Image (cartoon, rainbow, N blue to C red; front, side, top):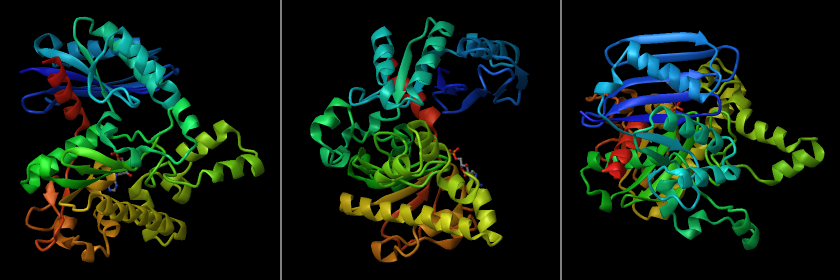
Length: 400
Ligand code: AMP
C-alpha cells in the first residue's frame, strides 16, 4: 500500500496529508498555523479517529516538521510502515518553464525561488517548506506540483496581455493561471462521469472556494482560465477583487494616497465578498442577504453575474461545450450560488434541475452528482475536488 506525503506550505503555515495511492484515501492530515508566532497551533489526525492538538511555540517550518513526525510516531499511522514513495509539494508559480510535476533537486529549488517576484506571497513560502521537508524526509524523492502547469497549454491569444511587448517579456508578464491541479482533477473526472473520452470532451470547470477560478478545457487541455499573472484576476473571491480596471490602482495611488503595499492588501485581502459584504464566507453573506442587507444582496449578484459572464465567454471560446462542473467550498456546497450563476442560460443549453441541485433529487445530496435536467444539452455536475490526491498521483507518475 504505497503512499505519498503531500505538503502545502504557506508563509506561516504547514498543511500536510498522507495519501494512499491505491484507494486515494487520506491516512492522516494536519495543519500547523501561526508558525513563528508566540503561540502556534498544531493539529494532526488520522483515518482511525486518532487526534492530537496543541498550542505551542513553533519557530519555523523545520520545527513544524519535527512536530509532525512526532505525531506520526505517537498518534499514527507509523511512517515506517507507510511505504512512502515520495513527497509532493504544492508550488503556486512555475512560470513558463514548469509544464509538469518535476523532481526537486538543488537547481529546481533555485528556479522555484527565482520565480518569487511573480508570486511573492507564495513561492518563497513554498521553498521554505521544500527545504524543511527535504531535511525531514532526506531519503525520499521530492516532487514539485505547480498550480500553473496545467495552464501552460493556453494559446498565446489567451495568455497574452495587450501590453508593450518588451515590457511584458522583460518582466515575464502574461497570464499563468492557477488552481491547475484542481482543474485537471475535476475535468478528468467530469469526462468519466459524462462517459466521453477525455480527448473528445470540452468542459468548463468552476472552482469556487475562498479563491475562485474558472477553466475551459478542450480535450483534456486547459485553453482558457480566469486567474492571470497572479491569483488576483477573474472572478469575485472571498477577499480578492477579481478583474478590475488597472487604472483604479493609479487613481487610488494618485488621489487616495495608497502605497503599493496598501493596494496589495486592499485588492488581495480586503476586497471580494469580505470588502463588499463584511465576510469572506458565502454562508455569512447569504445570511445577511436573507436578512435584507442590501450590500450583501449586491455582492451576491456581482459574484454570480461574473460567473455567468465567464461561462458565456468560455462557451464561445470552446465552440462546443459538453459538460460543466462546480467544485470547491462554494461550488460543492452552495446550491443557491450554482442556480443563480447559471440562471437564464436555458437557450445556451444549460438547464438546472432544481431538486437535483438542492440535493432532493434521485441522487439525494451525494457529493458527486449531476444537477442538470435530462434535457440539458450541457451536463452540469457537482464534482468534489481533491488536490492532494491529484498531487499524490502526479508524484507517483513522476517517481515511477
Ligand atoms: P475552499 O477555499 O474551497 O476551502 O472554500 C472555502 C469557502 O467555501 C468558505 O469561505 C465558504 O465561503 C464556502 N463554503 C464552505 N461551506 C459552505 C456551505 N455549506 N455553503 C456555502 N458556502 C460554503
